[in-house]
Length: 567
Image 1 (cartoon, one colour):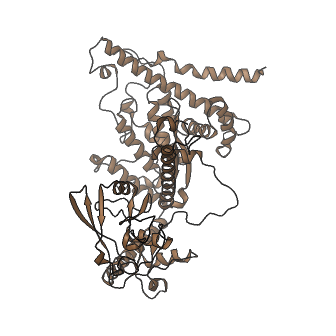
Image 2 (tube, rainbow, N blue to C red):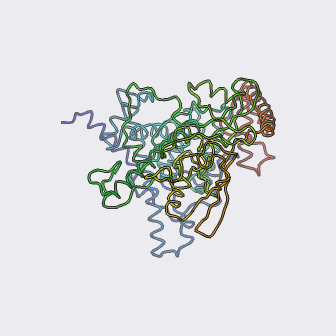
Image 3 (spheres, rainbow, N blue to C red):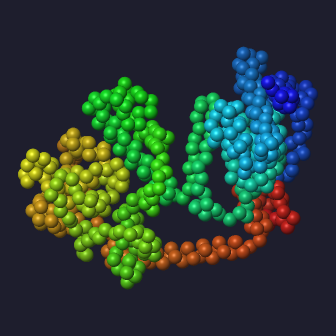
């Protein structure tokens, strides 16, 4: 049985819906009085000087410009527009209910740090997850309490629901004061009539003005995971993972490698006709389809259906494997020769030594001092040794097929140029660096099918095929589709004396630019925040309104010492 208090709360919530009746949102004919609560006809004239006005008022005449007056199409256009306005008002009513629930929750009383309690209760009512409910409560609180002006436009139906979602996404990382500044700016924009492009441009400008004077946030402070773009109609949502570039690329790399491994296992299981559940067959339809899942779907399946191991097993400090080639003289501090990242990207000596200091084990790789070719190691089995695979990655940072640019750091396979004879290993191609190269999975399949065929001149192998020595960088001749011949040369260590000197000069220039940037950052930090904010607001307004460069305009939210802006 419901209590009297609960009944009264329900009645009050129902009374809050009185402003969303569809009849209020039918566009009045020309000359008719405006509905109650609507802005006066001359509201645009009262906007401040820096405001944005629409070229034309969005009235019934404008809506029916492309259709015949009084026709069936005209009625449908008006009905669609009325539905748009009604949906906006109903969405506003939904936000106000959530904000009221949050504000009056006896265990929370509007404290954002305790919003998880309200979210647990709301999730049950909205039949959604806790994280979705938490995001809805947070957005509702910001919309109703922090941005009342734009919320009024939404409640009247003058601001479409999708437009308001865009505004909320832009202010989620702002403080309450900054969100209120954005609201004040948007209140001076003629929201009922402007285009969507103008609206989004003004939202971006408002955020820039509100955050003017803030110092950049370091990447390590931006680590975050949140649910965004919740679409209750489609039943979908997005997970946004934000963090330093290297960490996000490492996560993407590990997820890609895992998805390719699972895809290969699915294909093998389908070809063998195995019965029973297949790996990561989340819809249980792979056997019926007869094909492995796409990499996109597999990334999702692995991300959402993997068990997160929280045992007390310490993960490696760098789960993303990077190959850094560092000269021994650089590590010893004898010179400042740069290192090479994955055989393609030079990095400063100081950074190389910093990386080396954090690793407990290093692999020694020898190169020819003249040619830079990686000196070989041998193997007596079909599978190359770990050291040989490491050398192959250095020699082939991208697929060995001419013209292919796929990196071999992931989804690549070691391939024998002269096929290995499993029955008589001494009669077939040997597992040697002379007879090995690294191919992407697609070109490996094409080589196996005979569509492309590589050849190497035995004269290039002083070891006469045993792969124990090499004269330098090897060249491979390719026959493509039995008609086209192409040659490819393996990569070598690029750190010749000439390139070392050039990189050292570039490193010194980079260091000077870096020191200058640090100095300017320190100067900016020492300046008063109000001074920085005034200059950044000026730059933002000059970009948004290039035609007003000669006029003195005071932007919204100006502080007391900003009455004379420098523009």
